[in-house]
Length: 488
Image (cartoon, rainbow, N blue to C red; front, side):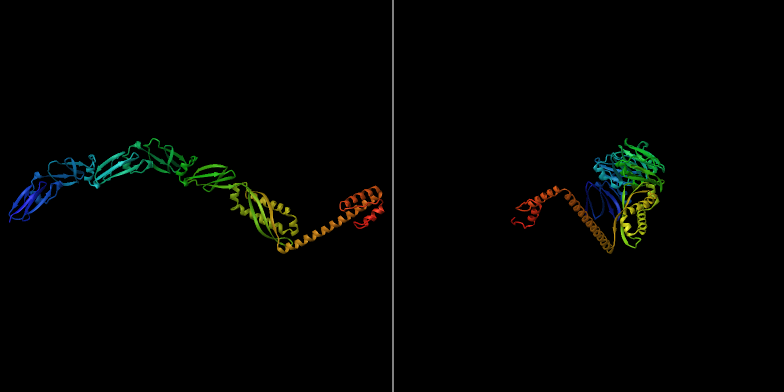
C-alpha cells in the first residue's frame, strides 16, 4: 500500500525507517510503498533541536550551528526584525532568506531597544532602566561594579546585572568601598565628625539633614549643597522652625524663660547658673546633659485650712490661715527643700499652734493682730532659709464650737444690755440738768418766759382749728387747761 507525504515550503523533515533516520525531506510531495515515520520542523521557529543521528541526516547547508560562550548572547533577525534570543550554549539556526544571526558580548551595548526587541528578549535577561535627573547609579555585573550610570534610559544584557541606585534628594548615601571607588570624586564629599561635633546639611539655604558623629558621604552635585559643622562645646545655632523640626529633640535643649520666671541650668546634674528672662538654646550630648528648671517668682498664696487648736484655757477652735510668698533665691528654693510650699505650710502650722497654746480665747479674739505679727516674726526667718520671702501672714477665719458660740453670744448680749442701761441713765441725768439750767435762766429773764409762751402757742396753733388768747399768765393757763372746742 502506498503512502504519500507532503512537506510545505516552511518545513523540513527526516524520514525514519525501522527506527533509524534514513533521509532528509525538503519541501515537496513524496510517495512510499509503506507508511514511514517522519520527524518535522518548522523553519518559522528559526532554531531547532534534534538527536545526533537525526541531525546527521540533515544537509549542512540547511542550518547553521552557533556556539555562544558564557558571556555571549545571540539575536536572530528575520527581515531585520528580531524574532529570537539565544542564551549561552549551542544553537542550530535554519538558514533561510532574510534570516540573520548577530552575536553580542554581555559588555556590548544593546541595539536600539524597540518594542519588538524588548518582546524578544526575556525579562530576566534584560536590565532596562531609566534614571531621573535626581538619580545616580552604578551597574553591578556578576557582583562586580562595572560602570557609573547617569540620568537617561539604558539597557544591559545579562540576568545577573543589578543597579546600586541612589536618590540625590537624600543628600547622604551609603556605598560599598568598591562601588564608591567607581563614583567621580566631584559628585560627593566625605564628612567625618568627632564625638564633640555635629553637622547640618543645607540645600538652597534650607536645613535638610542632621549628622551625628561618624563618617558620611554627602552628594554635592547640586551646587547649593552646603555642610555646616558645629561643636557641641560651643554655642548652639539659632533655631528656625525648619531647623527645630529637623534636629532630634535629644540633641538640643531649648528653654524660654518668661518675665516672671528664673531659669536654673544644670549640666550633668550640677547647677551651672541662673537664666534671666529670654530664650536659650543648648547642645545636649552624652558628656553634657542639660536640664533647665523654671522657677515662678510671682507672689503666690498658701492656705492653711482647718487647723484644730486648743487655747490655754482649754477651748478648742479651728483656724484658717493664709500666707503670701515669693521665691527670691531660685537655687536655694530648689536645693534647700524638696517642696517649698509644703515646708512653708509646716512652718505656718507650727507657729500658729505655738501661739494659740499660750493664749486664752479672749486674748486670741481680742489680739488677732498680735497673732499675725507673731506668725510673720516666726515664719519669715524660716522662709528665708528656703530662699523665699514672706510678704504677709494672716488669720482668715476663727471657727468656734457651737456651744462656745452660744455662750459668747450671751456674754456679748449682756455686755451690750449693761452698756445700753448706762447710756440711758447718763442721758436722763443730762436731760434733768438741762431742764434745771433752763428754769434758772427763765427765772432770771421774764422776757424769755414770754418768748417761750409765744413759741408754744405757735406750735399749738399749727395743731388746732381755733385759739383764744387771754392776756395774763393766769388766764392763759386757765384756757389751756380747758378741753378743746370749749367757750371762754
